[in-house]
Each structure stands twice: as C-alpha cells, then as structure tokens.
Amino acid sequence: MFGWFKKSVKPRAEARTAAVRYPVVRSKYDAAQTTTNNERHWSMADSLGPNLAASPTVRTTLRNRSRYETANNSYLKGIVQTLADYQIGTGPRLQMLTRDEKANGVVEELFADWCEAIDFAGKLWTMRVGMVVDGEAFAVMITNPKLPTPVKLDLRLIEPEMVATPMELYGNPNVYDGIEYDRYGNVVAYYVLDEHPNDVRSHIKQTYRRYLAADVIHWFRPVRAGQKRGVPETAPTLNTIANMRRYTAAVLGAAEIAASNAMVLYTDSPAGQEAADVEAMDAIELENRLATVLPEGWKLGQMQAEQPTTTYTEFKKEVINEIARSFLMPYNIAAGNSAGYNYASGRLDHQAFFRHNKVLQKSLRRNVADLVFRSWMMEAILHEDLIPLSIKALPKWPHQWFFDGHEHVDPAKEAKAQDTHLKNLTTTYAEEYAKKGKDWQVELEQAAREKEFMKTLGITAEDVAQQKKSVEEE
Image 1 (spheres, rainbow, N blue to C red):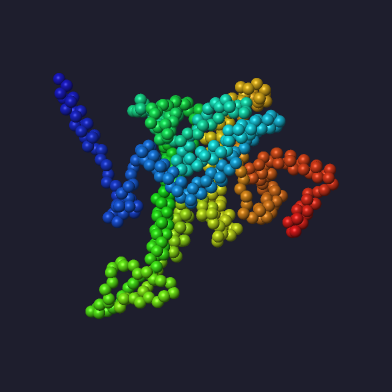
Image 2 (tube, rainbow, N blue to C red):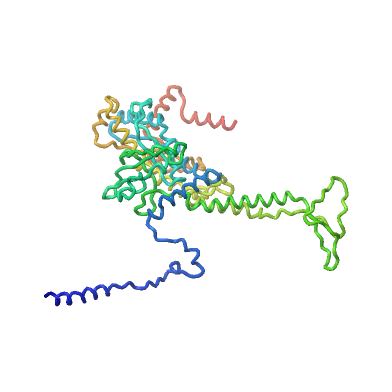
C-alpha cells in the first residue's frame, strides 16, 4: 500500500548520502609535504590524543629513562636541583591580608611553626623535582598525631606509580589511570596503592585506598587540552644528553687506546722489495737507555692521539645549551660556568629564566600552597582560642605568598636604580621588599626600631656606614 512512499523516499536518501564528499587536500605548506627526503624524519609523527600519546606505558618508559639519566648524568642532575632551588628555595612564606594586623601576625606565626614541623619547604622541593623527572607530583593530606603543633595536618608524598586503577575498575569510563572523574570532567577521587608496586613489598597482594579529590594534591602542568597525567619535563632532552655521555665515553676511549699503545712498527719499503719477516701484532719490549735494532726495512713510530679534543669542548657546550633551553635556563647556570659573561649579557639571559620561575611559583600557589593553607585553616579554626575571632569569622582568608628573592649580579648598580625608582615614585617599598621575598611591613617596623635604638646610642646610620667602610678598607 505504501510502496509509492518508499520509492519516493529512498532516492532522496541515496542522493543525500552521495552529496557528502571529502575534497582532496592540496596543502601550500612545505612542512605538510611528504617526500622521499623527509619521509623517515616524520615517520613517527602521529595524531594521537593527549592521553593516548601519553599512555601509562609511554609515561612509564619516559619516567624510567628520566630517572636513570638524572641519577647518572651530573649536568642533568645539577639542572634539576637548580630548578628546584630557584623556584622553591626556602619555601613560600604566608602573609595574611585582613584588617586585623595583630591577628594576622598570630596566624602567620602559627602557620610558620607548622611548616617547620612538617618540613613544608623540603616537601615542596621534592615535589618540584618530581615534576621535572617524573612529570607530576602527588601528595596526600593526612592526619599525623605525632606532630608537635596543634594542627595535625601533614603531607605524605607519593610517587606517580602509586596512583593506578584497581583491577576491578578496569573498563570504567569514569576512571582513567587511577583518577575518577564525574560527568563534567571534575576530579572526584584518587585510587592510591598502599605500597609502591616495585618496592620491597611488591610481591604481596596490592591493596589501595580511595581518597577524595579534596585530600590529594596533583601538581603537573598540562601542555595539551584534556591531558590528565604529566609527562617528564626532561623528555625532550633525554636523547640529547645520552648522546653527550656517549660522546664523552668515545673521546675518553680514543685517548685510552692511544695512550695504551706506546709505539708501532711500520715499513715504507717499495713494492718488490720485501722487508724482514715480522710476526703480525707481535710486541717488542724496549729497554730503557739502550739502543734497539729493528728488523730490516722496518721503522719505529709513536701512536698519535687523534680523538677530536678540539671539538669536544664546543660539542659539550652546545649540548648543554640545548638541554638548558628546554628548561628556559641560561647556559651559565646549567653549566655552572660564567666565563665569557658580562653584566649586560648576564641580566639579559636571566630575565627569561626568572620570568619562568614566577610562572611556576604562581602554579605552586594555586595548585599546592593555597590548597594546603585552606585545609590547615579548616582544621585550625576547630581548635578553641587558636585562631583569633576576627579571622575565624571571615568567609575567606585573604592572603599572599612570598618566595625567596634573587641576589643581583651587581648590587651597587641595583641599589642605585632602586633608590632612583623610589624617589620618582615608579616603585614602592612593598614591591621592592617583595622582590627580596620579604614583608615590607615587618622590614619597615624593624628599621624603625633600629633607628630608635641608634638614637639611644647617639649614632646615626651614616656613622654605621662609615664604620663599615673603614673595616672593609682595612
């Protein structure tokens, strides 16, 4: 009955399907062309998504190689430790920004005592090293009843291998590599093994715990949209720095071979005139202070050490510079050698590095320090008479963090420039003290107390400066 309707609809559906065609891409970019010359170079390029490209297997391989190279290469180990020293230093210091100055001081002192008790700065340093070598850092906020402070909050650092998906949750679309997400992509919980999977107790059946997202710190810097786990920051440098170690071993091997073979026998007899028979690869012992008669037709020559000693230094310099570039670190810091640097080039090379440090410190404040401080405050306000009421009643706790400042290459020029900026009001005491990682209010109060004390002694700041200059001249 409805045959006419089917016949009328079917051709339309077929026509609609046939209309979908994919045009042939004719790229005008040279880099998009695949030729016989560049085919091998681009053979490993792929279009994998961020999490498949950095799959657990890939990250495990990169992590193992990164740890091995860091442990065995002095340059890479120094670069990693220097990054943590510059970016973490002695740790962030809290400054409360409420209107109650006295209450601010109380909270700052309590938090500083707690940081010292758990070695907060040391744990942040280890986490930063973990980000560079492993690609990410994890910490679980736990209760430690043995802490000597009223607040018993503590941080337990864990390695990335310990965050893994339990066997019974394999195939769950909401769990990826030990992290559970909700339908909106927010982290809900982490699955953490009780023991490292490759430690002394790895033969025992693995047990795990499920921690809520609010109790876990996961610090890494995604470079692709949707990336869920971190890749070692050393990844671009691993092949390069491994080649440097191989080159060093090759140069050393060439020198050892040349040094081990003191002399060789050779003949320049023309064709048809045979020299005396000599056993191939035979060794002739030469005695000291005695003339030695060689077989007829043979001469004695010394082995020349012709390994590329002249290019070795330049090769290492370029390799270290290439590795340091991956971390936005100047060559002189990476190599531990400032030969050839002057004041201007030193400042110019350090600007990008210091800017990178500020970006990293902002990430630290947002992803680690602020989370820890909020958890610390939530526990501290539960203690009666520990936190002043003026702060306890606030819905938020305004604050900021100070990090260590960097010493200037030329302190005299920096002091002169600082004095000029303060006089023409292009900077403030708060900004200048912040560069040194200090609280301007605390420093100015201390300066005022020192001036009052000098008045009682009948001396001035100029007298102290003159006395210091006299001592330095002596």
